[in-house]
Image 1 (cartoon, rainbow, N blue to C red):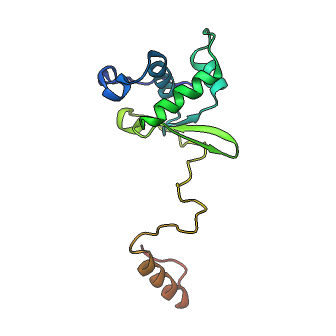
Image 2: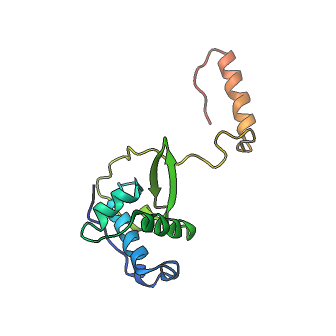
Image 3: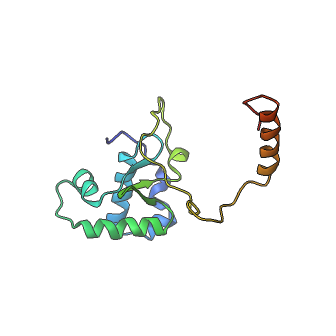
Length: 145
């Protein structure tokens, strides 16, 4: 659902956005206004075309290209979950102040190493795991990180 959002004046002079076409900049503004309170949204090109540019005759393939360009500039993170396309605006909460935020119900992007046999663990993971096992043996079900 579209929301009222503030556009920072520095938007117009941002060097990354300066590399974008006018359509890509307008799409980015539309992504901001259609993102939920955590900066997530649906990235289906047909849905975006109908909600951001309802009066313009644009191709879904143009949206795919524009989204890809915005993603290449790290302005948008594009991902799919169960065949559905989504986007995340990494700097959304830095530029938007939400008075009564609603928790996002959209799925989050999976880490790059999800499903990999070589998942990196935090350095202190083994120490915390040892403490957890000790407490578990002692009959405690909780542990402190």
